[in-house]
Image (cartoon, rainbow, N blue to C red; front, side, top):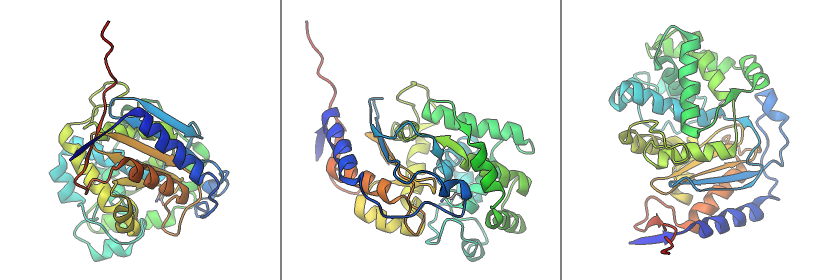
Length: 327
Ligand code: GLN
């Protein structure tokens, strides 16, 4: 069964989601990273980028916030592009941990691999794998350049966030060295951790995240710039990882409610991928207890349901092409 949607339907869904949740005041900003604690909690933006490059935005979609764990997605894709999905599977894995994003117990329970590139341990391993190894600046340029290609804009680290996070990331330091103990970090552990901390500190907007998600939805071709950013066979792999662990120990709840693979970050961003159809991003700083933005979850969930984007349903949504005018 297929159902066509057009741009007008998406505009309606995005505006309704914004109006419905703009006043929601549940959740708390992340406080374990001092910078994030002080971001105005009422910021709220929703952006959609369709697989044909059409963009729809409402609210604070130009505000630069910390990308945080959403950055695990581009680095996982880059690791698969450089080494192939099978090597990433062998060296990191593709399993849910069912535990918080920064869990050390998850590493102890699965000491043969770090489970998935979408939790801290696997993301630090993914950073360690990015070529070239042993050269922090060149590795960083590879990661930053890849984020830029995915979202079609240049991005920069938010220095204050990077300093704030570097000064307080004791748990992540333990993870990096525990991975070293298990032979699961493929570059210097401190260098790999620093690259991970830098990628989490990238400033990004909801508008940019929507384009990144749309590039994944469009099988690796950025629909705004037209550039082929990664091979198409990687797209279903990264989408499956997002569906497996995008909201950590709350991922099952999320997929049950929405059926839309998505990834969250403690900066308040969420990026959802409707394969072949669109990327959706939402941003609002206050989080639930698992570190997922309350308002962004509600907004993305509303849009997914309103437009019928559940990937597990029998209904296939397609984009209606604009009518061609015959002179
Ligand atoms: N930089 C954060 C951390 O490592 C990212 C966590 C997140 O967004 N869930 O703790």
